[in-house]
Image (tube, rainbow, N blue to C red):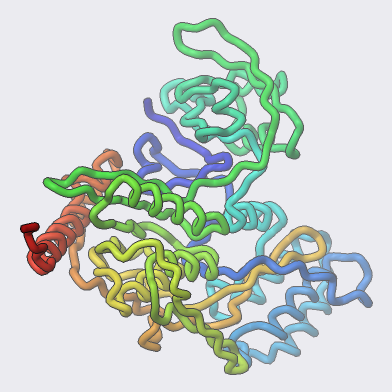
Length: 445
């Protein structure tokens, strides 16, 4: 089946997601190359202003003025900028948003960005690793243009209600879906936790039926994993899609489960991972590293926060990390720490090269602001911004290989995946070396 799709409480890597999709419409703001701190609740900072679009304009100005990493504001007179912004008359919030975005462009920093209320809500859902909904991935059948369930999330309300991949949704709360876009269907299905949505479902070779599903808070899966039999050894393959607030606990579960199944080593796949929460990256590094520096951050006042391993690693088994040009931010923090502490070898292509940290603020009208507040540095102290991290072993995919993996994502993490195959070969050599170096055991008399 061919269909376009939208995700509800579900995040997948782009390679896997393209299996059935000619285009990708993501329900949310992507964490594109952004290391984020926990969102901050920012009270209105311009109480003297009347309740108008100018309130949000001044809130943004105040946050940038006090937190932005560059005290010279890209050689802009930021105080004059405020005067100009407040002189303008704004017909509505959209006009104010447009002025804010234009003003932020002058900073020359793509990661300091304004988020309208919908974008901010979606971003906080992603960073929290949770979403209110029924837990389905929704799409449109390209041939019939019908609304279809691509996949229900395991253990979600949709899954418990019996929805299956391939189910057609004929109506939502009594409204026919025939003329609905994915965005309109999204708006109809979303709602407050505990409320119900009624769907009319058509299933091939089955009578049409109605189902009422209660919306719930759903934890978004950031980690998927499998135990692969590779020759005479078992390799734990872990794919990390993003660094949400639940990613570390999901990673912990994956490592423990694969270790209990006698994995001999691990392949950690960070390809296509655009980043996420800084602290999530630190906590995941600590699951793999017993000792060593992880990352340091420096703000505009020279404040230097340093993060290191805490002696609580879950495993010391051999590890290879897969990276590519879309591995960014928190992915680079993790990859850099593992490489430079000689805990893992990196295989693949040079990473994206994004060495800054953002803090996210909520504004008084429900909109938000992500502002760059610091630079971060891997253990060796080298600035990776716009440079990236080079793998230990470069294995670039050619266009045909990229196309093959995109068309058939089931090949990812198999012998048909050149970067994964090279990672397995490295692990096999380490297994052999470890066996040869093992101390002989004396035979009993």
